[in-house]
Length: 206
Image (cartoon, rainbow, N blue to C red; front, side, top):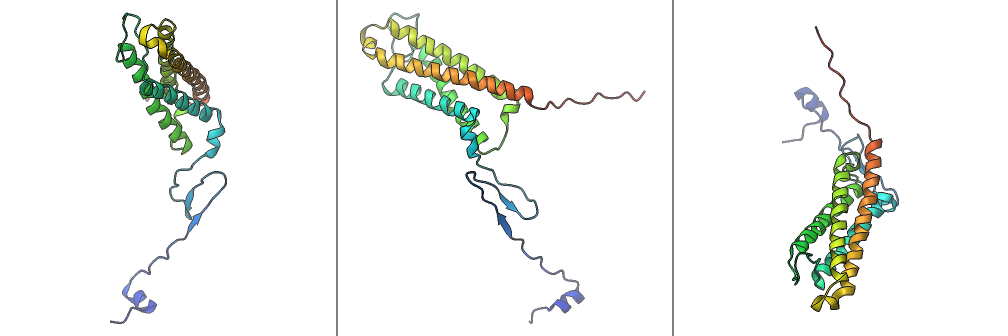
């Protein structure tokens, strides 16, 4: 059966096939920019390389590196954070579970925030969420570092041989705590500058 011509299509009331729209790929350096459709379709996530040089990006990298080193020493040497209530401390004390949980939480949350900001998927800094999380992690890491330092300054027996490694682990916990404090101040400033959506008062119809 011969194909319908343009005239036959018009007589039969058939609509012509729409021409496919071309995609305009826009690249910019050094950022991985958007892949945009010609008529304003949805945009792909954007890799913001400049974020790596921002204050927030530097703090996030410092947090991830410091906590990763401390956690690696904690599990690799292995070390303990000690427990002041015990005279003979073994690995697996309550201080170890507390500090280990704090470090694992930090290693889950900070890379997630870093990825969200790097891809510009969400701006959590304009909410109170990151401010609260950073402040809690700063406090908990400071407590963990203080427990570690207090234990290894008076360590005896088998732990005395690991005193240098234990103090180093505590120092990295302090560095992570300071990074979270600075990140909290930055998040606080961004939250205070963020526009607040205040609902308009409801007018009385009476």
